[in-house]
Image (cartoon, rainbow, N blue to C red; front, side, top):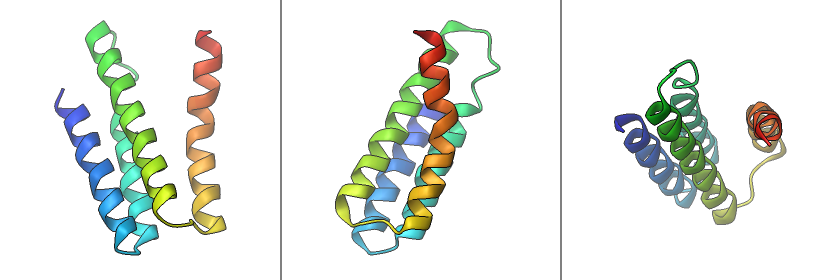
Length: 95
């Protein structure tokens, strides 16, 4: 649960940084939140996977908030795309 809370704080930090025009730092906060979520992947316990899913959703919501605040540069978009691509592949394998 602490990891979900950390991801939530990072998503809020990302939004604040985007409002202040620091898109580079906002993108880094979103990426850090996703890394926190991914740190739970090897855990075999169901509750850990539920927390991981919630943290990934929180990171995704943070990314949406950042992109809605101010246009991101092409480099930031490519960085986000590269990081979320494995998550998209994982979602498709579970279906």
